[in-house]
Length: 382
Image 1: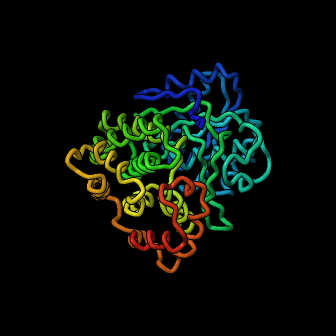
Image 2 (image 1 turned 135 degrees about the vertical axis):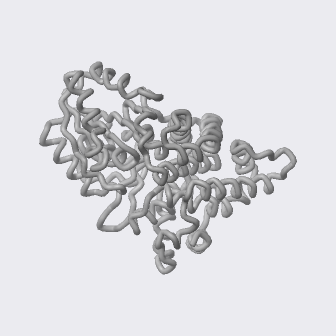
Image 3 (image 1 turned 180 degrees about the vertical axis):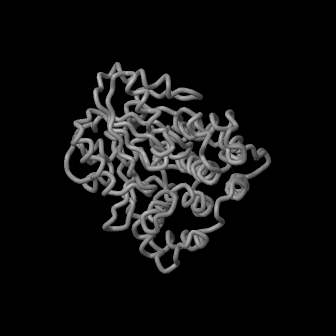
């Protein structure tokens, strides 16, 4: 059985790497960029920092700064209209997962036509997207280097999971100096998002030796550095470690896919407009409790990667230690204790569960459940 490993062709990582990455664009022959970002980064001057670097290389730029925290079909259409108006020949995403996902939707529709909802699912496009360069400012989603694109369908109130080889950026940039200004809450949420990526990829039914190595190293770096990054946002070593960790976790889930945590978190985000990383963090231990009978040995490996001595433990004991360690890390960085604190409603659980079972991420969860079982996981997290 063969496997395919997806990753951008070029990836620039480390303190100050943005200044090294932008000159590389000249070699592609690009003339006019659409920079997709959000209002905060635009007003903070980060978008101008990028456009100034582009100007030095003789590249023009238009800015779309309307991306919402959970990017919508409207965001994609607005960005696409601006791209066409300015005759842009490539797209730059600047920010965390939201601008990256929005930019992917724009770039995919720019070449394939139609509405972004037509590409929900796996590999629904027929043409490569417009070239996309992804500049990351958070350490969590790894959307800057994956083939995953999550867009909220405003009419159906769901998050569409678009998993498509054609959405992979051609170049990613992880300059950890851009992450120093992240607030503690965002650092915690994105860091736990990265941990969820690593854990779900490691227990995935599509895991391989390559994704396993990436996932476990990511877990170790997160366990060692996330608390420090949250407490001291300007700690350069912790920030750089988290930048590498989220990238490694991205390499893992981009190829091994994910599981019920993401399938369920997508529904919470789409239904209530909640932060994705926080939803993942709350759900992660509950889903792994459910998965434990199918992957206790793998969860024990994750416990070891988190620094727990598991030598004298059985697989089940190691798995329990893993879940306990995840809960402690989540609590230490200030993640809400349950879904009730996020104002999720028990009456909505049947709808959330039904939609989660349809999500593309559910396919590779190690334990496959039915409607009642997924409802049960939601209830345990309330």
